[in-house]
Structures are given as structure tokens and as C-alpha cells.
Length: 81
Image (cartoon, rainbow, N blue to C red):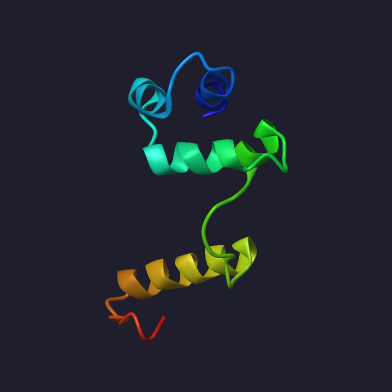
């Protein structure tokens, strides 16, 4: 991503060519190029998506519980979890 943004910002490639060459969606590339508030490394390292509801520890415990219940042949529906 960093190389693609640098290539477009330095006018080495256009949006379409950089998107094809680096296999990045054109819209994503445009958004990264337009956003000049942050450095490139900050933009790339930024996490995407929603913030998790459960902590990693609680999520790991839930996974273990589901596996144990599955081994004991107690079915759990999605709503049960």
C-alpha cells in the first residue's frame, strides 16, 4: 500500500495503473492518497472494522467453552453463544 501511494503521489503512476500493479482496489487507493493528515505508516497500520465487544481473553475463554460443549454433544445455537 505504501509503495502504491508513493508511486501515485510522486506522479510515477496513475490511480488505475497503481491499483492494477499493486492489486489494490482503486477506491481504497484514492482514499489513502486524499488523506494527507497522517503519515503513510500510520494509515497502513490503522486497524479496520468495528471495535471488538469482547476482550481477547474473554473471547478465548468463550471459544474453549464452545469446544468443550461441542465435544460433549451439547448443541449451541448462535443465539446461545
